[in-house]
Length: 190
Image 1 (spheres, one colour):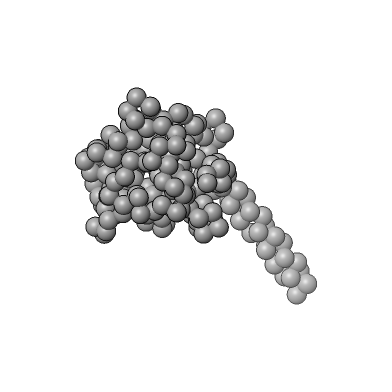
Image 2 (cartoon, rainbow, N blue to C red):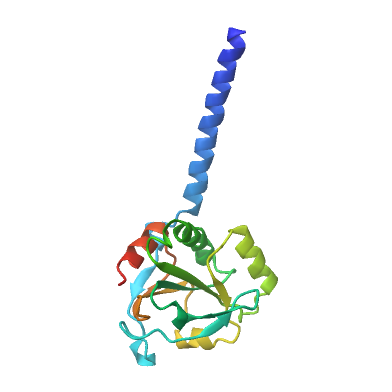
């Protein structure tokens, strides 16, 4: 009997250690290396985008056909993220966006708006599948005509604009962001 209890305890310890190891490996596989993190760039003043300027307004629709108008989010900090399902850095960034949204959206008075670049021949079913696989709950809207991408001069994905509570552009970041980088950038917004 004592031998069975001892084996049971050892088995529980081994399973616990294995679970800890697997979790660490999963966490590491979703980590974004420091050298790959997004970098802040100056918005392109030649096309009218500059720090302190009101973010160009738009209305885009989510997968259910419901509209989202950027200017209606004034009063909140906004993380405006342009992404695509076929973009590996976007895929690496998505779990961090979701974790940030779940943990800090209320405390930081922030809304994340993901603009999926569907105009590049991406099937909507693939977008739905992608969002379900990452259990994304923050608003995702579909860019189907390139008009908003043109307004924001999106050449690289992911590209993220940090917009303050007054609706003004404060930062443009090219490349993926992790949880800590997201929080740091959002907390710098008014």
